[in-house]
Length: 258
Image 1 (spheres, rainbow, N blue to C red):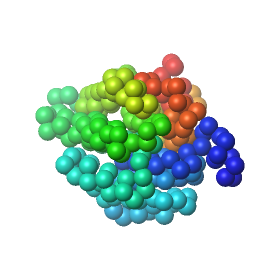
Image 2 (image 1 turned 180 degrees about the vertical axis):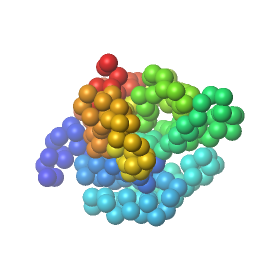
Image 3 (image 1 turned 90 degrees about the vertical axis):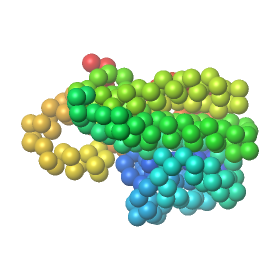
C-alpha cells in the first residue's frame, strides 16, 4: 500500500488538507476519503459531537479537528496557525461547509442573503486567503476545492439565495485561480447534483412516492452518493490534477446534460 501511495498520482500521502463542513454529508465523506488516500486532515465544523464521529471514521493519520463557526472570521487565522504548528503546511483545502434556505424571492430578506453568503462564500475565501500565505502553504504545490452546486449553473424555483451564493462561489473561484497560479496553487469547484446525504434521506421520508420518483427521474444515472463527490474531490486535490485550475467539475449523474 505504501508503494501505491508513493507512485500513484492520485495519492494524497503526507498531504495536509483542511476541510470545512466536515461533520456530515459530503464534507464528512471528503474527510474520510482523503484520509483513506493517505492525507492528514484538519476538520472544521460547528457540531462538536458529529465532528468527533467523523474523526473516528478516519483512516490512521495525523489528524486534527476544530469545533468552530467559520463565519467568525477573526478566529480562522488562529485555527490555521495551530494546525500548521502541529501537522505542517497545507497542500489542500476543501470548502464543503454550506447552508441552504429554500424560499421564494418575495420571502427572502437581506439577513437571509447575508447568512447564505457568509457561510457558503465569504468564509471559504477568507480561509483560502489565510492559508495561501507562504508560511502556511506547501511551496511545492497545493489545491483548493470549493463545493458549489448545479443550482449555481441553472435556476430552481425557491432557491434564489442559495443559487446566487453557489454561482458566486463558481465565479469567484475562477478569478482566485488566476491570482494563485503563480504560487502553484490550483483552484477549482465541484458542482454536485442531488446527493443522498442523511439530511436528504430525512427530507425524502416526508415526501410521497410520486414526488420522490419525479426527483429521481431527473437524474439519468440515479441519485448520487457522497462517495461520488468525494472521489472527484480527491482527484482535484491530487497531483493527477496539477494542470487543472479555474474549472467547475459537474458531478450530477447526467442531470445537466438534458
